[in-house]
Length: 344
Image (cartoon, rainbow, N blue to C red):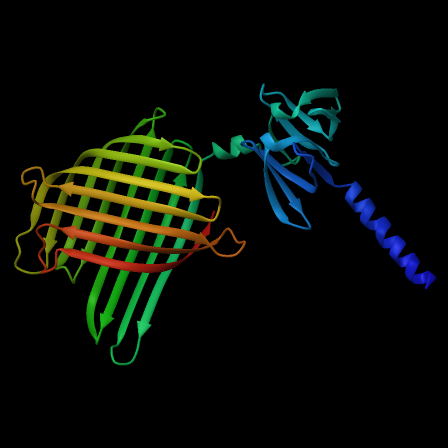
């Protein structure tokens, strides 16, 4: 029995030592949260805990915090300090560095990170490549045989005020051994903002679609971009410009070649790291015949899978409408569910 009591005391002492060496966050309502402060950025304290996983606490709700290990702290004034952070009560903090002790207020901390890591503000302003590879495949066997396959590769070099993007995709579908979809497309685009609201863009797309009798289609355009909403979790960009469209058909339809007007709308909204909703719309009418136009609309929701930053599931709908098509159908509507793997 003494051995058991001794083990219990040793365990309690070990837990106490562990908790005493951890970082601490005191909220304005008096709650005490213990864990490891990994980052302070954009008014949010990121705290890793053993009991509740990763917590995000609004800095406005924090009375004070302290760290056991050194942290790099950047104040609102731009001052940088590196060292352990201790709370001195009433929202006051003491940062102890090799150059001395600095006393400040919790609200004046703009960012904090572990030594050796990068300032989050610097990281946000860097241009970085991101790659996406996606696959959606469905099949049905029985009274009706169906099969569809869709693949897409995308690469983006994104900065705070510009984006360079490339993509390639292929879609194929069969029903009762008859092809109902056989389309390949690819393109590139670049968009740059020279002010908070105004920017410019250029894009080009190449496409072939045997089911719609499109042997080759080329669409190029450029113009002005307008940032109607530009927030951390939401953006809305409107585009308008001029372009040129050329289409060669597989049947006897006369090839089309005409200058165009280019309109676009792109919306993105992220909800609490739970999902991202994206909506894209383009409307391209011919200048010499406004009734000859093409509309492409794509709306989808991307949901992270598990705790991974790499795997996502996208569910969406895509509509392609041509007012004067070579095929019988003017509207192509597809519903899709894609598995996406992203990496940087």
